Structure formats: C-alpha cells, structure tokens
Length: 78
Image (cartoon, rainbow, N blue to C red):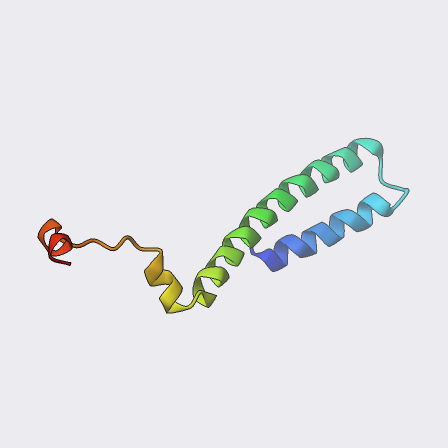
C-alpha cells in the first residue's frame, strides 16, 4: 500500500477504536492491524529519510567517505 493509503486506514482504525460501539474482539483485530501498518510506515519513512539524507549530502562529503586508494609505489614517492 502507499503511505497515503496506510495513513487513511490508520485514521479509520483510530476512529473505530475510539467508538465505544466497537466489540472487543473487533477492536483487538483493528489494533493488531494498526500496529502492523505502523511498523510498515516506520520502515517506509526511515527509507525515505535515508534517501533524502543521501541527496542532501554535499558531493565533497560523499567523496570523503570513499576510501582513497593509490598504488604502493606512488605512496612511497611522496
């Protein structure tokens, strides 16, 4: 599901859980579904956050995280 769809479903679940007319067994099933959706949303948001961090990292910083390799002979000449 998309994030928007998941959020909408969470809103529906929340409304049903707040309704005092929801039977206990149904409320437990809804709660379980909500926990599953929340976990999936958390993973999706963490992934998106990481992508944004990568995109916002200046190019100089990206280059500095890569190992600098040179041949053994070039290192001795310096």
